[in-house]
Image (cartoon, rainbow, N blue to C red):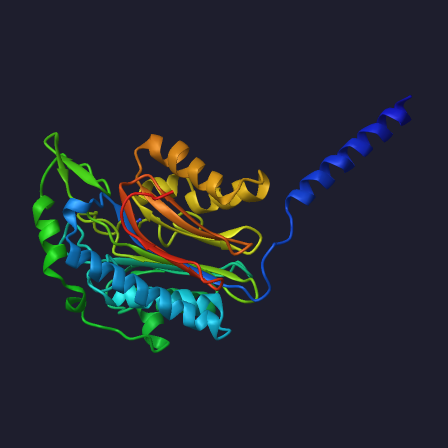
Length: 349
Ligand code: ASP
């Protein structure tokens, strides 16, 4: 009798394992197809805050970044190089909160974080709290490619970047009047509750509509996925504060078995929910679609805690998704099948 029960249990276990493994299906991707998706930050982005001229400037810069990455992919380049090129362009633009134009901390300084991850090898590199590296994403790549570490902070990260010939600048390079004014509005105030979209001063809701972290995810012709993110963090953050961006699995994650993700929003909540990795895990273990996984993490996990923001994603099939629980998110994608889109405000689908 015992023998029969054991055999039946073994058969059931086998069937359940089989069912699970067929869920983790191989990619269904058109041969040689590729795609790139980018974001320029999420937040209280409403039409009334951004005039037509500014909309045009943002759209043009997003398009330039998308095209830079797309061209690399089209020419057979790898996804890591594509996202790096796209992020470089947004870091160099004062429109975004990364590189030039990064926001200021409570001491009036800029401290930047960046991360990059290779979905094929699960190698990753990140830098935190740097303010002399012109393009922090390049330094993150150096950490990934040329060190045994994943995350270097402050001076150590800068020494490494310099050693590998990354362009260094005086911290004044990152200055913009706009970001300094944002800081002046809230610096030194008590009872400040920072939010990506708005903050409270003495219980009065100030709509600060600050945004601008940048990120990119790409899949290349070989089906390899990469993700990267770069940011100045949040205005009036404490000196030494590190956000979700350089924390692998929180703001940045890539895994060829599931997807690549770059996040933007109130970083602390993305760290606490290990947001990007959570999305990937829901897809891997629960067979959730990208759309379902993004919704679950943004609306059922981050939202109820008080976090705001969004995520962009490319899955192993080369499909692009995004979602956000903030008012808007600068975003765009371009795929080898000719499909492309750039959007700023509320969701259209
Ligand atoms: N997630 C970034 C941080 O908390 C900020 C942002 O996305 O705007 O550092």
